[in-house]
Amino acid sequence: EPNFPDEAIVKSALRYRPIMSQNQFFSHVTAAVLWGLPLPADVLWPVVRRGLDVAVFTPARHPRRRGIRGHEVHPASAHVVEHPEHGVRLTSPASTWAALGATLHDAYDLIAVGDAAVREQMFRNDPPPLATVHQLGAAVSAHRRVGRPVLRESLPRIRTRSASPRETWCRLVLVDAGLPEPELNFDVRDPHGRVIACVDLAYPAARVAIEYEGEHHLFAPEQWARDLARHEALAAAGWFVIRVSAAHLAEGAAARVTRVRGALAR
Image (cartoon, rainbow, N blue to C red):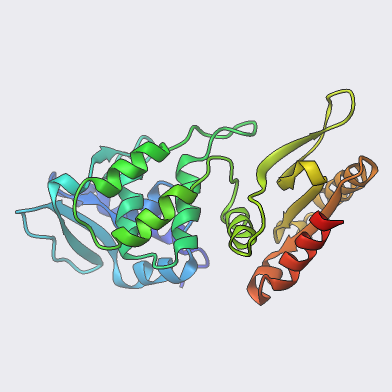
């Protein structure tokens, strides 16, 4: 099997593009991957194995073909557009997110995808957001759909300044443990107004920062050195930095929550 299921899905979609009927479009997980939305691996691998999500509007019958999982979609439940880069017909980012309510049963995963869809331009070379929170809400309300309860539960928790799914998970874990909601990608400044660092999650009043350490830190010495310098600068400015890794999230969040709660109470 390929190492990266999202890349395999994109390649398969582009191979299918020349033989797509005019009434067909990509949907569900396949559309999410084409939009670059982050999905858990256990959702991506089944698409690699069973085939692409290809939909038609009712009353047309869904396609039956090897390597394809057909869907019949009510015209009121989805908006179809052409992808600006890949040149394929697919559901819009908002319609795609709403359709994932039938696939992503964990609200945290849905919120992370929603965060990615509405992410504002925070850093150099960031693309514009794919959708707005209002568009996501309109897509949820457009028609009866599977997963509407979890979609409605997730919608008010979507934020525009989360830079990664792991940041989203960190935020949700803290809030669901009863802590205040942190600010996202917060610029810490020195007394002269110069930016010392942009921290992933922050409680500015308490000068507490939570930084998510991705795996790239382990294999990029230059990045590691920059991060150490940033943390030293933050410490010199009176900030307490709590570092969180994927292993911490996998093992359970209780210890990190306790550390954050203690830091806020100091």
